[in-house]
Structure formats: C-alpha cells, structure tokens
Length: 267
Image (cartoon, rainbow, N blue to C red; front, side, top):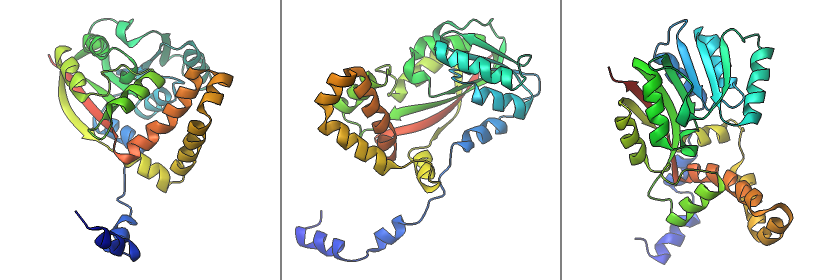
C-alpha cells in the first residue's frame, strides 16, 4: 500500500498507468451477439423462439438474416402489441408468430424448436422453470443463446437487494450458480460461456451511444430529492429510475458482469 506522500506524488504528474488507460481495448459491442449467433450456423427454415421478444426487432432481424421461422414471445401486452405491429409492417406475418405468454409456460410442443434467443429476460423469471421449459421445447441438438447479467463480488448485498426490488429481478437471478444448476436440471449442456464484463458499456461510450456522466448526475439529483420525488411520483417509479441508471454504471464499474451462455439440448 502506498503512503500518503507516495500517493500524492503519483497523482502529481502524468503516470504510465494514466497513459495506458486512455487506450481503447477494442471492446465488443452489441452487434457481437448477432455475430455469435451466426457462428452457430442456423439453417434456413429452422424455428427460432425469441423468448422475451419485446418489440420483435431482434426476431425480425434474425429471421431476415438467416431465413428462419420464428415465434416472438413476450408476457407484456404492450410489448406484444408493438411486436405485432412491427411484424405486420415488415410483411413477415407468414414467418413470425407473435405470442403473449411467459417463459415458465411456453405454448410450444415438445422438441419443436431449433433455436432459442433470450436477451435480458432470465433475470425477470423463475430461471429453473423457464429453463426447464426451454429444455422441453428444444429438439435434441437444438441450442439456446442467453444474455444475462450476473453479480460480481464487488456488488454489495444491499445494492443487490435494491436492484432486485427496483428492476423486478428474481433474487437468485444475479447468481450464476443458479443458472448453472437450472440449465443442468433442464438437460441443457453448456457449449460456451462468455464473460463480457464492461465491454458493451465501454463500446457504447466510445461510440457516443451512452453518457455515464449524465446517468451519474441524474442519479445524484434523484438522491438529493428522493423524498420529494417519491411523494410526487410514487416509490416504484423513483426506484425504477434509480435502478435503470445504476444498472449501466454497475456494469461499467465491474459490480455487474454481463455474460452470454450457449446451451445445447442433450439427446
């Protein structure tokens, strides 16, 4: 550990460490997820389940890029409305079926699906039940690509509890061991697990797509006016605003670790 004198001498001038930190590490961006899916070699005509499709933008892109058929599934009526509109506007009604349902109760037949795409959804559901359903509907040899955000040891228990409450997360969803156990119980074998860490957030900053300083400033203002804002807008609304800003900042600071899993349904 440095002494106080050594510390201030280090801060006094330009250090080699500071120079190193100004260099980009060429972080992977969000496009990388689509590149990873392409590397898995989906074939024309195969069936894709987009679990938690939201507005179906990912579904539409994957169908167009790989000539797939798809089911865009989401439990939120507003998302289903947006997805149906986007599919209709894209002229893809024959290729994409939009379904309002939860991952824990997939309205699909056993072994009917070749691919499952699941981004930022498993944290909001019962992972054991959801992955059991994914294992049921995947054909033997079918694969599931899932993007999830996990806690690192840097995330304090109070921070984890606040995030879970604010962002409607399952309390176990930040623990990677829960996904490992649930996937194994569902008959899903791990193909690969890629720890992205802060890469997407770094890339968003470098591409001027996200301003962490703005989020930090708004969060500081929220904390100073929290009681007033809660009275005016409700506790849930204020917690959601705080949680949404903390989510990205915690990823950048290494408290949260985005991770991509690829699982394969065992025969």
